[in-house]
Image (cartoon, rainbow, N blue to C red):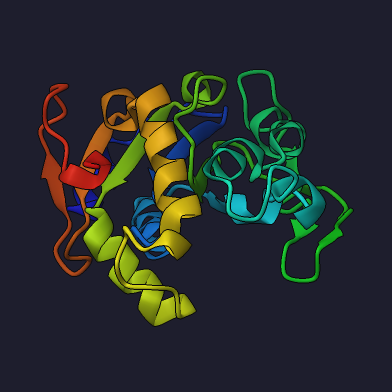
Length: 221
């Protein structure tokens, strides 16, 4: 299935192509995007893979509405100005391909100022992360994928990975699950994406009909 996505991903000849892999925390974005990048490279495309988590705001900004705030998770997680400056403009229609892959280290809570790297002609840039179909980002993608996975499954994965509660309705999960529901209410990413993928079983991802009324119950209260 990922090979089929790679085959239909538009390449803009000597220009650049921006591709988004969107999904909630625990939906499998990083693994999916890595496999997608390999499939694109196998078709002869130069590929740059960007992790949106390398453009997280520092903690003081991320938590300014409170550490448990769903609104803060939805509105304050990412430094969109840095993502624009360092990735979206360089790989955009008038871009020169000189990009930076990171603006912060969220584990150390420090900003980064790496030198720019020059991407080659025809590079496809994959950005994987959350909230990538929000209003200001959705028009920037030449192609995009939304990984649709029920919260019951993503919370289970997060519990294994991070030690958080496996119940998506647990109060300690409110920041993340309710924050994603705010995103869903505002952006309906499954409607904006070029393709919607059911990634409930990451060993067998499945393309879903993208017809406006097909969406797994990740947004159920």
